[in-house]
Length: 429
Image (cartoon, rainbow, N blue to C red; front, side, top):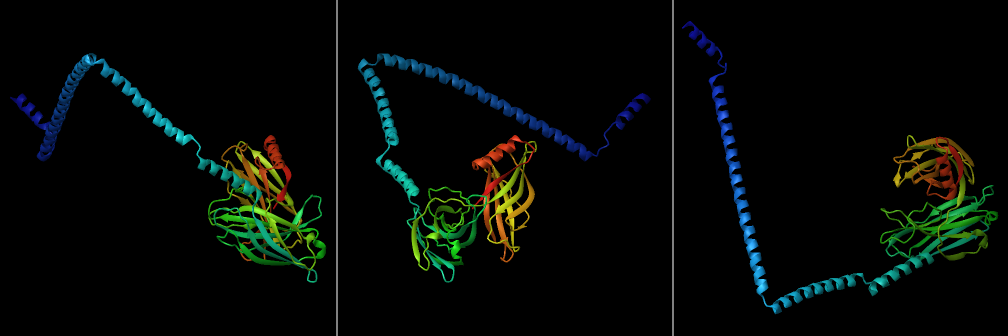
């Protein structure tokens, strides 16, 4: 008895020390799980039965199809030969008719029509017209010998080849030849610009510009008028990117770059004293003028994919060197049509030879051997001018897509890795 009592006491001590509510809750949860398992089992059994029934139906259907095919074959054998011949003849005729219709459609689409040939001819004639005629610029010149003044009047532009309306303006620059070891070196004496005429195919300006000019300087001076335009309608069939040039007629648009349409040059040696001369000249293809030289060094760092551009010296022909005028340079680089952020040099005083001795480091996303272009722009600032007014002196282009001399400089840089290579380049305006 004592052993049985001890066993009972031991079993009572093994009971879980939980309240009754917890025990009933655990029991209810177990029953719920059992019910969920039973429902899942019944669903699976129902699906298996449905699949079995569907398989049986498939077998019955396949057997029925076989029977119908056999019957059709027997019926086809029993058909009259005349009906069979008609059926065999009608099917290929229908196919041939459909193929013929499709071929006719393709022929009408592919054959060049009269209107398309006329359009192509008109496009070709328009391109030839743009190459032959760019428009005419009317202006007048008058030199007053007693006052030693030159009066220039921009009258109008006619015969523009643009299709849509455009905004236009004329920029005028007075250039003067400077004696130097550089052949063809010129200096810009004055620069003017007319008011912009908006949305007009035959712009009339009527702007007048006056400057003092000695009679002895007439033979060395040239007036250059260039026509720039920004079309509002369809664009012109002309080159899109042209560096800024003097004496231009411009067409303006907020959302597009101006297009250089043409220029007119007149040497002032043709002028007669105290006699007004009016000109109506045809616009010619724009050309740049040599206004100086820039000494640039290039250094290739292929491991870090960087290029070091050194701006050493700049030679320009200025009318008068003034401490009020300062010069700075801006370096732009683009590789595979990806433009890097530009860098500027510190300002220097305007003299005939400007010494910078500054280096600029650019990181390239792709190897330096790619199609990279470096643009060096030199600007002039005046302390008297209000705001951040600047004037372009000239630009030099280096790289693989640049002229031959600059391309040779690029090739030398690629040959002498991690060594700077310096070379003079022309400044063009």
